[in-house]
Length: 441
Ligand code: FCB
Image (cartoon, rainbow, N blue to C red):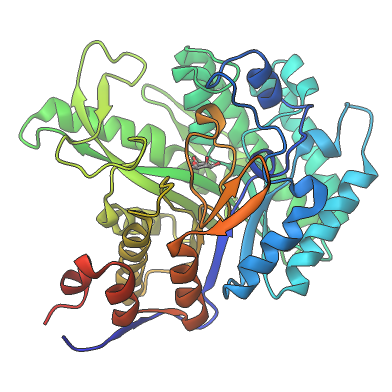
């Protein structure tokens, strides 16, 4: 076999992604803390100390990332810390975040900051959360405060992480707070999240002309289960438009395309400087009259699929290619803001990582505008309603002792980042079973 190397463009961003509630620990003033206390997640699991970033362990974790050649990191801010009550800004919390983003620069990593990653302050929840249009104005005030405080260190902002997941899980499927199952509420929340994004976009640019601002969607390929069956095609298309296209389309055109109506929010037009794509997996969709909440499309994994440790992810590297191909229609730079797999033993992750990064390289060869890749995640962290049952880290975390232990993918990812390339030698060492597929001949 010939030795070969897939090279990435100069200045390509390599990093990992994290979110405040999942890594900080000791967050007791948001809707997720309350949800955990009420016993909605896996019994006995709470966020607790998480990765103890609030206690300062972000320093050692950033050292690991920097030593592994990462040149960027995506993190989020905890609104409930910065604005614990409607009438109070916590300057110590802002100082903490200033130290964190400065800490990234000191280690040669560019911060990408997410302003909202699933959690809301309790006082926002008490006022009806994102079902209440007033939340849009509150969010804007919070954004203005933090952008002013951090603008010296951050120019790269994600407004809202996965508004499609937030609305679906919280207001349709009921696994996230507030645990509703109501299409009308979900659509209301989608509208207000989009307005929140637009308000944040304009507010940031007013404060910082050079800012790059975008939203982050969770992209799932929706494949009609029976390719020959028109109703499967119809519902797969409907799901894909509502789940995948809705937000980036609205942030381009100002049109909110719900399944049976379209609203116009003109201030949302042209409010993305880039699009963040979180890609993990793809679904099959088949028509079912029973799947009302899923717009009559039942979603499931193909029984032939290779699935991850807890059955959360079906391994479809080609879906990464599809995701970035899909993202091109919005005519902005694309960033893979999350991708990864839960795998406590490191059996699947090296191959998953290699094959997904290979698909990005394929896209780059067509000149598709992908600017960076952020792996989820650096260290095992608190995985929402799945608690600690899922281990997404390049480093394993012992939550009792806070000890970190590298998994095989930590070394592999470091080699990729340091070389800005994926080589046949790396594949031979970490996932020889796909060597012939990726480097034929
Ligand atoms: C994404 C979330 C992220 C993490 C991964 C596994 O949907 O944005 O916080 O939980 O899934």
